[in-house]
Structure formats: structure tokens, C-alpha cells
Image 1 (cartoon, one colour):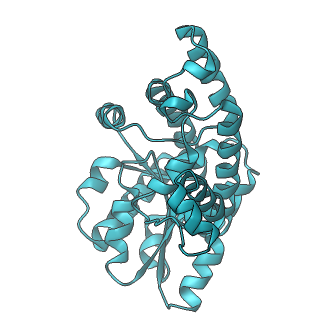
Image 2 (tube, one colour):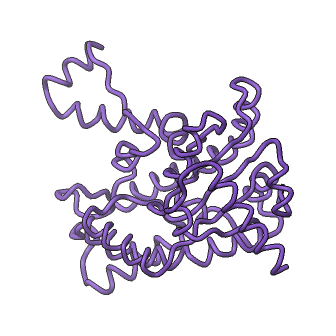
Image 3 (cartoon, rainbow, N blue to C red):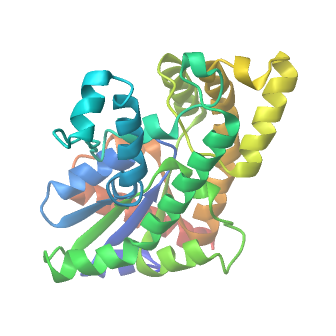
Length: 290
């Protein structure tokens, strides 16, 4: 940890943090508040994935869909139009659409083999984007003169690391450059995330072993064949299990590599001064419990 105590944090001329949590608990909200001050550089892992590491396959997927429309196909072949995803740090529709959902192709589903390939592409992209964090810390300071830095990670960061391994390469590199901060939700937050997801299920990235187990269990439980699975029904069924799977992994990341802050404190945050105080409190709690 680059800040061991609240005093270390308060005295630091350069504050660097990496936020992790389930999607929907405030990572991007906090990052935007900090960025608006003009002193904080906001590095979005999801934005980096979509614009750098998966831009080409996402664009190719859009072009393949456009080629099914004769007029658009003619325009593409003539190089008369340009098709590219429009990606924002708080709207990853294009990335999610590419990641997709497994199941019945008549309902927009992907064959499981294709789905697994896209999951593997996303994992490689997320690991690469995480590895770029140090580069952007240096770039933000050297080029733009930002004093402080916040890395806004995707919810799936915990899928690719072993938080109990003191030599985990991803966590070792990240924790050497920024303070790892877990935004911890309550059971009420979890219930609300499930309700929100049930209304609008969105594609997610899963640890391969977890995905295979869920897929096998779902087929056994429902008696369905792969080609008959309702894609939305499967990811709804999987979501609560994914939350339960991720929670102890987040907790271990915070316990071994960083600090924990309650989601309620983040929800009440108004400005960078509030954020400084929240982090100082978290470091003081960790110091007292050591």
C-alpha cells in the first residue's frame, strides 16, 4: 500500500486511488466528481477496453450486422460509409452488445463456444487495460499536469486475480502505483442491484470456471438444450450467483491489498474534500485493526 496511514494520505502531494466494486455502487460517480475539480485525472478501464483493446472486434461485429442489410452492404463495400462504436465511460452499450449472451440465436443468443471466445477476448482486454494504469498515471502528470489520479475499474476485476496470492502480478503492479479502494455495498444494495438487473439484464464477464459451472447447472436444472436457452433468462439466473461469487473476492482484495469504504459514504460524497476524508477514515480504521 502506497499510503499506510491517514497522515500519509493527507500529506501526499499526489493522491492515486483505484476503485473497485460491483457495477452500480458509485465508482464512476465518484470519479466524475473528482475529475470535475480539475485536479484529478479519471482513467476508466471500461473506456480503455472499448476504445483501445476491443475497438476492432466491436466494429467488425457492427459491420457484420450491417452487411445483412443490402443497402448498407453496398455502401460498406464501396467504402462510402464508416461504422464505429460510440463509447463513453458511463455508457458501454457497444461493449456489452459485443460480449453478448449465450443461448437461442432466434432471441439474440450466441453459441456457447462463440460466447466463450468473446469472454476470453474481454478478459485479455481488461488485463491489458489494468496493466496500462501505471502508464496513465505517468502520462496524466507528465503531459497534463494532473496532481491526482483515480482509476475507475470494471466490476469484473476480481475475476482475473488471486487476492490471497501475495505475488499476484496484477494486484502487485496496481497496488504499487495506487491505493486499492473497495466500495462495499450492503444486502440492501445487493437486492437493489438484482432488481435493477432483472429489469434490464446486461452482458457480464465471468471467470471461466464460474461460467462453465453456471451453464452446466442451468441446463441440468431447466432440462433445456443449449440452442433453446432464453439468453436473458440465463443471465438473470446467473446474476445473483455472480454477486455472491464476487463478494468474498472483493473482500479479500480489500483485506490483503487495500481499504474498504461503505457505499453509503460514497453516496453522500459531495466533493474532493469529502473523498479525502473518507479515504483517511478508511486508512485509520485499517491501522487500528492491524
